Length: 451
Image (cartoon, rainbow, N blue to C red; front, side, top):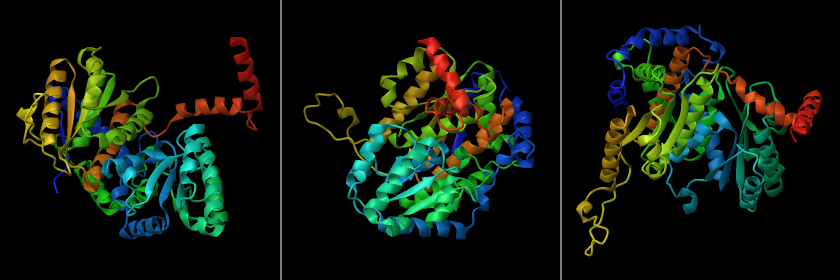
């Protein structure tokens, strides 16, 4: 099968001649640092060759566990936050029927996501929906103490045991967690849950191709072997020995850093397929959490076109010229629908009669690209032959390796997230968590002075 393709011509034209090529030495050095483990955060490089290290036996084990859940559950709740759910959700939503949650044909369990917020209404409504249903839980957490996920899992565990009995609940609760440490590991061992390990050297946002992503994706009924095969082929296409001009991840890292150096501070991920919304959400976490450090980093944003052309389109066309776009374009949709003719033609659209809806969408895409480039917005285009497991696997690895290279070129550690801890410290202090007494006193005194 062919690979996804990268076109940077409509971005490079906004730079001086040879500007992208000039980044080749920096990109090569960055990729060699990843390969040799000499870059910052080198203890989190387990994702780098993960696709080719995955064994058929491992995938068989994932699929066997998924089958137990599929055979015994009407719904499966994936409890996780950030990288512990976004990758799985991106793949599942990209490949699912857009209205699958309404159809509920009995062939596949409904996949639900929780543990990613602390909304009381959300959790109440989730528990109400699950009443009387045979449901299972995939609890994804290295520590088992992340507030959002731990709170949700406690609720779901109690409800599952109450509705199905403790012994039956054990068969449909799966833990994806640390090999040895943490509350989730302790709970899994004590209760006898089937469990999978999150590798110590793989951070959450790079974990789609570990059980974190593979198990929920398999539960949804998708072919994880094809997903991994796509990632394997992209790993080869982006290998260190591949020439710069043929390496899509190297070029992507180069052009975005070149644009950043010219004041393009915001990258907008664009799609023309509603199913790709959560691919953009996953991408935003991957790049935002990896590069937003040391007062540096391109801000990752996203839009769903053509929908957002009627809202954000004005700003993108005529607003401050600090942006560039990266467009994911699906060459061939899965389904076919022709535009009908109408005798009265009140809407004046008979000129489209007989055309595929996708042809109209493609012309909207091309027309938008022309308009935005004319308006001063550099455009990168990623062309994906079809929306299936194989090409989604390619896309995942392409963005991961591109992120690792790009972050190293930028001069940050792409694999840590020190800024994420600040809100947690304040929240725990405000909730009077044991061990935070001094912080609690200090923050309450501060708030009293501000009133």
